[in-house]
Length: 190
Ligand SMILES: [Zn+2]
Image (cartoon, rainbow, N blue to C red; front, side, top):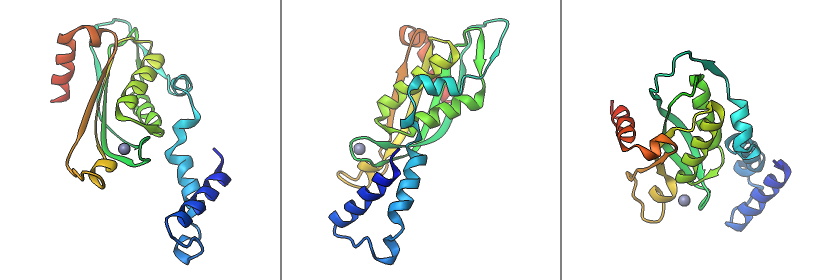
């Protein structure tokens, strides 16, 4: 990430919107924004494969009961690629059917977090998380549900403050088996 370029772009942006980047409140803003970008867009630095390799700590399980592992309501923040606007109050729920091993629970949360630290669409975020979980766990059977509020919808445009967007991504058995989907949805409601 080119922080010097971000600083210059923020200065130019402030001028473009009619601000004075030399006034006291804004003097350090370009530097602050550049540092913030390194954190909130960290996931842009890595491919899905690289994120999977970072967080692929697994534990072998002897019997494969074919039961799903579900991690519910992981909080993440992301930014919409259409408006660079914050997506907030996001809850990511991930289920997968272990293939002889299970992922460390914190790894699932870290995967969701890192995939969200990109310019995203909620649908694409679900696909990214499903792909990374699949790569890290060796399971082809993954379900992801995301609920989120989009500030490009709540704070501007049609201003629907309470509208929540829900997206689901199913792969493998979750895609083929409607009963498994229903079980996933029922577990989410617990
Ligand atoms: Zn948007």
